Image 1 (cartoon, rainbow, N blue to C red):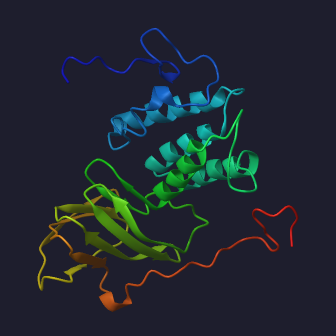
Image 2 (cartoon, rainbow, N blue to C red):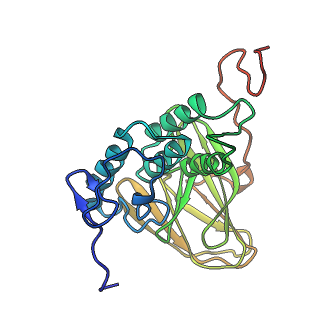
Length: 256
């Protein structure tokens, strides 16, 4: 690692390579892959934040060759930075201008990676696992006051479920498939961490920037419940009623 050169940077942000600036529009964020999806340069290091923002904005400012994949990548980078409203806006631009009525997408021909990337971007509003930490509801748009998800898989083989009501996280449920230390970041003021296999479970809590970072050990096949003190029997993930416009339709030639 000590022999690697620094990422080349100029006044517009990250460059394509040494002495090669990004000067023309391109749909792909290949010159930003150290940010996403590799997470080698992250906003956890405060000194990176301005550079990430500048590089992202410069890439998006070069119009002409941007395509649907542009908006999924930009949404994921914004989600990584905790900017849920901006990510939500980018995803809506994708749906409004690029995704077809049957949910598929094409440029000169069908391009299946763009819808799959969009699905990933949406999930990253709900949950992210990178940097040896699982982030719960890291980039929820303000309009999503009620949201839940069930058994989304993260690094470490954990299946995570969580619910948010009126803008407040209610509970987190962690199922460990192989057993390992689990580290969770949440805005919930966690006071209880319970197991379905052990009467007592030791855990540590560190607060940072208004978030709680909880660490605990897990056993294979064990479920861990995190809450502010709620009865774990209330930990049920229920569907959230969609808040959509009247007569909204998807996939139909005409509205009903």
